[in-house]
Length: 65
Image 1 (cartoon, rainbow, N blue to C red):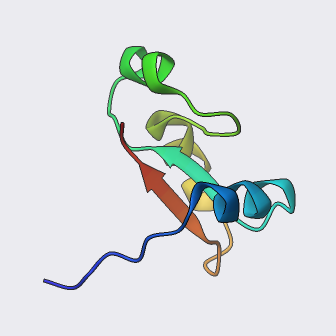
Image 2: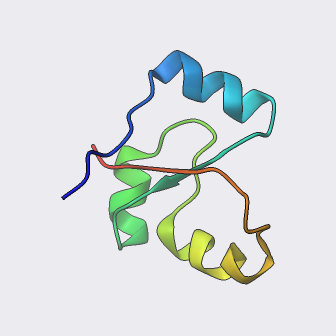
């Protein structure tokens, strides 16, 4: 198994502000997403709807609380 790259909250905030990355909550239910939503994040269901339209080079960061 390979190591998952990790970034700091400050680095992620910068990427969000610059629209260089997409922050996705990894929980499957929208109810759980509402409980742990971070500023600027989208739910997994929103991500799945957007996936076909995302450029292949998009940086995507998943989180779970």
